[in-house]
Amino acid sequence: MSKTAILEIDGKKYEFPVIKGTENEEAIDIKTLRSVTGGVTTIDPGYKNTGSCESAITFLNGEEGVLRYRGYAIEDLAEKADFLEVAYLLIFGELPSQQELNKFHEDIKQHSHVDEDVKKILDGFPKSAHPMGVLSSLTSALVAFNPSSVNVDSEEDMYNAMVRILAKFPVLTAWAYRKRTGQPLDYGDDSLGYVDNFLKMMFKKPHGEYKSNKVVVDALDKLLILHADHEQNCSTSTVRMVGSSHAGLFASLSAGINALWGPLHGGANQAVIEMLENIKEDGGDTHKFMQKAKDKNDPFRLMGFGHRVYKNFDPRARIIKKSADDVLSALGVEDPVLNIAKGLEKEALEDSYFVDRKLYPNVDFYSGIIYRAMGIPVEMFTAMFALGRLPGWIAQWREMRLRKEPIGRPRQVYIGETHREFKPIEKR
Image (cartoon, rainbow, N blue to C red):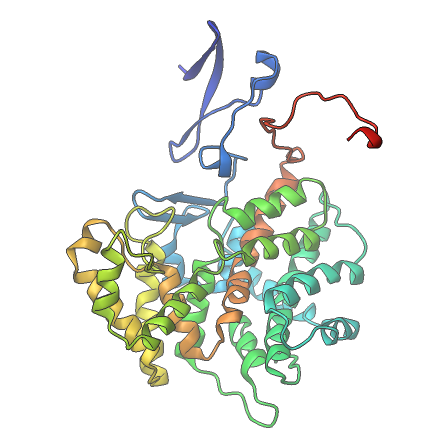
């Protein structure tokens, strides 16, 4: 027998079905609420208790520290798959065969060329422009170079659009970095893997030879996998909302990039490094700052510990912690800021205050350490996040369009002035 929920307003009862997901999550289906009650709506600022859609892409259980893409545990994917395999899984629903993966990668290579006129747009930005602003603008500009709308009823059209952006986005991300650093643009090397090629476009010196570092490539590959999707967060919901108007893929992705840019969303790993810099400037006493973090009257906040969703250990942090250690060891980095990070980590994992409250280092803490060790400046951190989140955004946009979801149109509770008589200007 299916469950129902009863809502009583002014003595009148209304019955609504309770739906259950495949992981036994339950939700009250209130899509008829306004019509059957004569205008009553719900209010849920931030949508913390509102499901905006049904989705088959990512399952997240914050209480138990579980994250799965299409049913596969994030631990297995990070250990056994590469980023392109995970991208294919998120978008198409199944892990690719070797033949499918080879074709996917070859098709991406074929579409990696970025029109020379895009460089002219990039040239119009000052070196001081934030990489996320550049990335958002260039992604939106791709619409002008691919003006025909995607026919969502055509598998070929959908596939080509998705491959095209997966191919060009790493180029645009690397170009945003090289613009910032005043280096000539690099077009990559088709003989390299997806992640290795991106690193070449980022770091190859104009007169030097690019040398691949397997430890760094593997660490970045894992980081991108860990960031590839995270259910209905701010930027993902934005991509779905914009796409629900039947805006194209590139325009929807550009909106998602802007949502991710916000410091409350994609800027967390940047905030970690900025905090570590401040601790270093103060003398580097990690114990002092751990005590400040415990003091409720102290405004200091410990960034990169705990998580808004995960009430236990962030499963992504368990995975990437080892990669952070490997990268620091392989690169032989001597950096006082990273030494401070290791000190904070050690104290937090041994201090009962943090352990009892489950304030463990999260994925943003470790990703910031890895990016800094690799020589990526803090203003590029969120752009790296966007590169990882790209396949998730694509998958969510595709799912929303194939399910023919209605245009997003939240309601409100009006709290402004009631009806007022208009006064001529001479009487105001």
